[in-house]
Length: 120
Image (cartoon, rainbow, N blue to C red; front, side, top):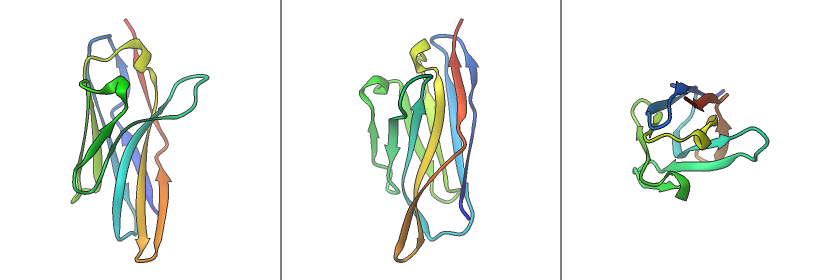
């Protein structure tokens, strides 16, 4: 079984920074796209950033210039550096991975989520 485990969330003041990590473990061939999503209370889960295995990134407009996604393919870990945080960034942040289990099997996995709270 494949597991994605996030870490790095917490409470931060507006304007502050946090770095989230998500490590994948288990039995798989490779991981294609990895991404970060967030879900605020009463809101739908929304994409924040995605990064391919070659390092190409895409960001939601509301985080462009503030958040940076990166990954370490050796460690099967994806990161989200969040700067200039705003109260509206408060949400549970989830990691997602498009995991190749075998040559012919591709499946999405989600982490358990990590809470990010931006408040003074």
